[in-house]
Amino acid sequence: MGTIDLKKVTKEDLLARQPLREFFVWWNDITDTDIISFEAALDSASNEGEMQNYLEQNPLLLIQYLGGGHGRWVVPHKRLGADHVTDFIVGERDSMGFHWTAVELESPKDKIFNKNGDFSAKTNHAIRQISDWRSWLKKNQNYASRPRCEQGLELKDIDPDLPGLIIIGREKDVDPSTKERRRQQSSQLDIRIHTYDWLLRNARGRVSAMETLRSRQLESTS
Image (tube, rainbow, N blue to C red; front, side):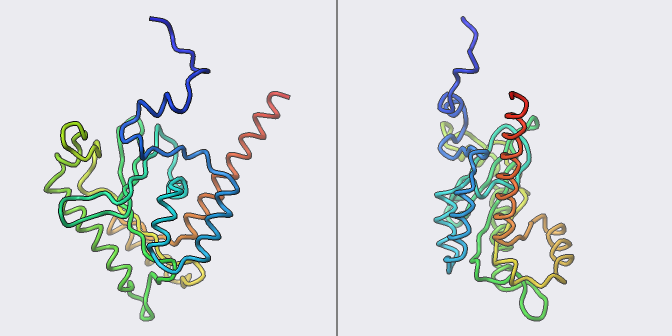
């Protein structure tokens, strides 16, 4: 058998070897155009459903906070049994295997905290959702991790206590004095709570990093 010429391997060739390949995301394909589009979508969105639809169509904007690895997956509306449907399950893979995060979206118009400083009803609802998904996974981990050819969900290596991520509200509506409390609560629950601007900031950072990398590559060949 001859050797593979890596220079001739296409994205389609690589994709064919990936599990859940219809949900595989090429995270480094992000551009300034994506940033502009995301900003416009955020400014015009009035509810959670609009952002769910937008991020389903533009999943690379949901994964720019992740570090290095061997692949990224964004799975929308994953049904967990008869009673639960996630907004998204985000996957990444490294030398240790697959790592999954349960993602719950709320509206960009919603608040993280109410006026007395407690989590808002929307934030508490999102926390309960993730807690319910974890409870289901504890009872059905084997089914969830089995490949689809064995009638499973193909969420390989999924941990029933998977971390959670809640995206809610905008930074302009967040009192800076609540930052430490939110960090502490997030740590205790293993659920990160961020605004949509956090997603936007990570996306901008990725675009900037890719531009820097391309500039260095050009300099090294000139």
